[in-house]
Amino acid sequence: MDLFSHTWTALRAVVADLSDEDFGRPSGCTGWLVRDLVCHLIVDAQDVLITLATPSDREPTRDALTYWDISDTPPTGDDPLDALTVRLAAAYEDPHLLTFHLDDVGSAAGRAALLADPAGRVGTRDEILTVDDFLSTYVMEWTLHHLDLIACLPDAEQPPAAGLIRSREMLEQIAGSAFPSSFSDVDALLIGTGRRAPTEAEQAELSESAAQVPLYLG
Image (cartoon, rainbow, N blue to C red):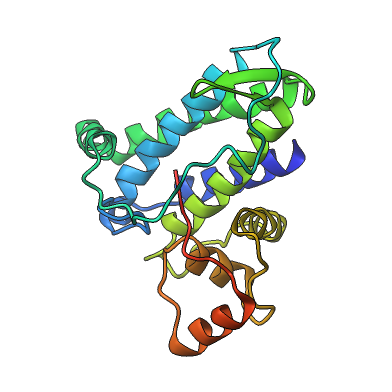
């Protein structure tokens, strides 16, 4: 629960510090500008609120690792929901409306997470998870999107170290193999999720470690 709050607070702080010009820069998400990604974060915050308000008495069907749908195909930005996000972000026009909406809904999502029972069960995407597992998935979501947000903002704050470490651990468990120890946590996440292509030297190390990457998480 603490790590969810820590990573979410750090991500929202970066958004709050964006200049108007920053919203028009590319993000690390294919086909999305920074403004599009911020709009997506609003939708994510709404998902947290909706899911935490959808209790279930059924047995969990997924956990923090099996929650993700893994694809061999990289995102193209042409998915209908991705295209909808772009149109919705453009409709805000003033970037300050985006930051206001994220702060409003995002703060509520953060409070809801703190009040939730970690052992409780909730429903999302026709699956059942414990609250703890559900919020753990968002530790990786927030961390990866933090990296996406600052992809073209070299002076922005990096994601919290604890979030990077935990996200790397989860991604390695999903991949079924550890990334080379020479990889920083940031590089492991970027390369492991296909956000950056490995160099020849990095690819050689990956081959030695038998890590199955990239993994496109959906």
